[in-house]
Length: 359
Image (spheres, rainbow, N blue to C red):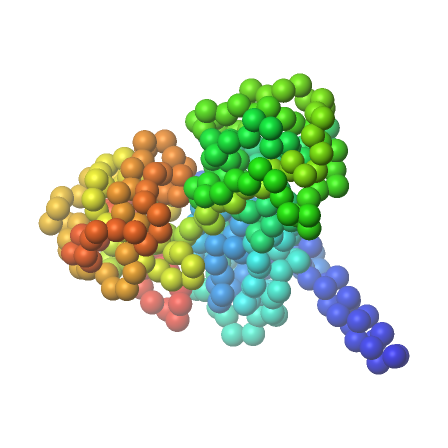
């Protein structure tokens, strides 16, 4: 028993010594840059071993930023980390639902250099297009993109009644949370998923084009006769990561998106300038250079899955998952039709272990 208590105490002390703060350095705004964490009063970097979009989502949440938009290399951001600055942690393993990076599984760094520093790209809260995700959430689900709809009012969370709810309202919630498309809304939750909070909103009437759920007309706040059998459950597609591959620059190449742990290409059916703009924006790579057909084909065909087809963007979206597209994996294309994108950003890459070099 004493041994068990000592083990618990040791684990508790180890967790207490984990990073108590996080910041992003060198980006265009406070929600983009090289990831740095604070230990014992000193700021150090994070190794990109195992670093993915779920880890970035937690950093964005901890900083009060928006949705995670990308996992750029930390070496892209100037000024670079100083040689005497330490790499504190590596092999970060977040589920994406944690409130802080310190709550994620992680290891003390043992074989990482600064050419492997991790970076993060979140939505900019100062942007006029930035949603207000702290006022709505999907609770008790597997990740932040599935769950029971709750809204926040005067620092209290309340359930949303299914009366008047529709898939159009679900689309607004998914967009506001930085998730993918709304794929399911259930008017009645199973007992284990029912909330215990007060019922607050009912008679939601969204067009599906609103930026936030708060923009939708509704019944009187705080006045509802609903019971928890009428809680609203929504499921959105998970947000996906993207990258440009096949070239010598981080900001040009064949487009690939990540879905269910696998990278796959995008078909060029109906693809155009507006879709290019959204990709360049999401990657932090400036503007599209409107490449010619020959330039697009210079990156060669991909292999493996073709994840997306018939993508249609307005050009105003902050990330590609907000654009219309077929369901994942449904297409009538071959890899000869893979999309390639060339942006104005001039980040060159060369391999040093696993890092990208900016230039």
